Amino acid sequence: MNLKSNALIPFYRYNVVAVIATAVDFLVLVVLTEFLGLWYFFSAIIGAITGGITSFLLERNWAFMKKNKKLSTQAMKYIVVWITSIILNTIGLYILVEYSDIQYIFAKIIVSILIGIGFNFFTHKYYIFN
Image 1 (cartoon, rainbow, N blue to C red):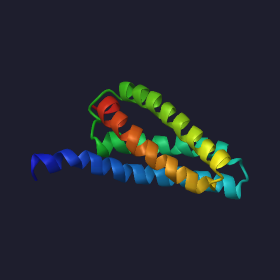
Image 2 (cartoon, one colour):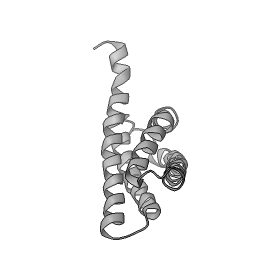
Image 3 (spheres, helix red, strand yellow):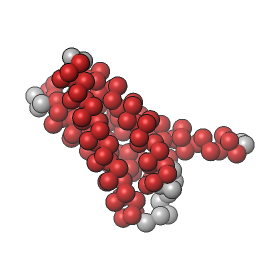
């Protein structure tokens, strides 16, 4: 493998983790909304929390392989970024559902992709797990 392809490994691994964490997030969202009757907004917050925990653990131990760094420092940085991400995701979801008349699952997909690529990857790689 050359240096360029080695540099892409964390990006590819991050995306695998993102898919797994997003699947957890979506599963919780749908189960809580469709089967337990919670308002989609509350379900989205709970889904984001479960997806976030999944993401942190997999990123630290596999995607960025930074388990030799201090856990408490990484966790504190992650919480700050994670809360910002949850706020961005839930505001985006609310705006798309309430003002664009997009069904909540499709709105969640759109917002998740935009925030995941445009905000999460860079803050996770260069701020939390650097």
